[in-house]
Amino acid sequence: MERYYQPEIECAPREEIVKLQNERLVKQVQSVWDNVPYYRKKMEEKGVTPADIKTIDDLHKLPFLSKDDLREAYPYGLMGRPLKDCVRIQSTSGTTGKRVVAFYTQHDVDLWEDCCARAIVAAGGTNEDVCQVSYGYGLFTGGPGLNGGSHKVGSLTVPTSSGNTDRQIMFIMDLSATILCCTPSYAAYLGERFKEMGYGPDDISLKAGIFGAEAWSEEMRRDIEKTLGIKAFDIYGLTELSGPGVAFECSEQKGMHINEDHFIVEIIDPVTGEVLPEGEQGELVFTAVDKEAFPMIRYRTRDICSITREKCSCGRTHVRMAKPKGRSDDMLIIRGVNVFPSQIETVLLNNGYAANYQIIIDRVNNTDTLDVRVEMTPEMFTDNVGEIQQRQRTLVEGLRSMLGLKAQVTLVAPKSIVRSEGKAVRVIDKRKI
Image (tube, rainbow, N blue to C red; front, side):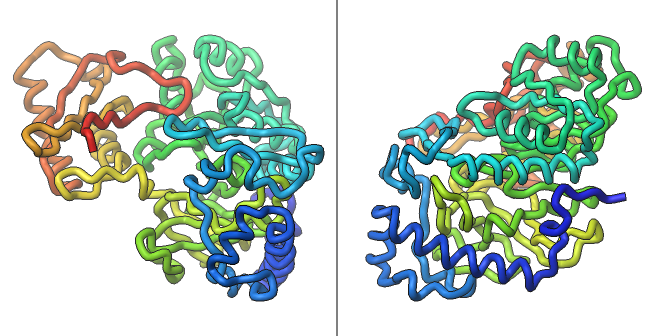
């Protein structure tokens, strides 16, 4: 039986959702015009005023915000409330340029935690569950978001943060944890460690996992589910919009429901900025209609995916977004071919390899090179050179079929690629471009 955290909102008729969005959008645009000079200037440059925005159908008239805008306005230039009204910041884990710092009023924190609570309940969580939050705490949004959501649901919350894997396993086993929240790559690593310690899926108390913060494939989902004996749920979010909980999977797992009472979604052509019809693949753009301290309007996420408003049998009426295929800014262009790391991961997992790999791109004699280093599992590890070479050839052909270009594949020993306790470092681009 499907459960809901806020059924009156999650299952509201479409006309009620649209009415709410219209009201909140009009109010938010006026507030941003009055309180955020940086965005007001962008509106003026585009020749639009709050009077031009009457419904969500007018959203396309407003200018976009990008990560470059956030860096330019750093730190206080996009705040929509006085500093005295703000109670917290969170920050991205980005490695280039200035960090993105997002601000929260207590109202913003409460709404964010409600969104995370919806995700936990959709994954089967109740006040009888033990929810282990193994996302990083601190500036990273994963830990604080799911921690607050777990509290709202009433679950016993175990705030382990990331790292110290043996301690993570100790708490899962000793406290009979039932829900695990972390990055998918760390869930895979936990599964690997459980296996090494002699635990099978029947020995592990977990029933569900809520995994996000990085791209992962359906093949990786099945691998994690098999190893840990759980049902794995996807969750989506980004610091600029609050954190995890912008969208989440229900039991049907046919896309992630976007919390439309808080976020209006658009799909645009990443090159032209044109809004695309439902079902077409493009860049995901969000407008946060009731965020107070950091009110993002038409924020370009760079995530590539599609949305659908087809009725979901779970009973929720909010639009669903597909799992992002990749990012328009993380997309690799190799010898003129668009390549997403998730495509490479699919080939590896389909051939029985675990999700431990690195993609190394370089440029030799003005030609791009693509080298994929792949860990063998302990079961397939061998010192038979002929067998290793045959396996490498199989992967080369699989990647050629998937990507349309040739890659160099190097199989390496188990555990020879450094493990990540947060977001996995999958891509090393050595090109000077």
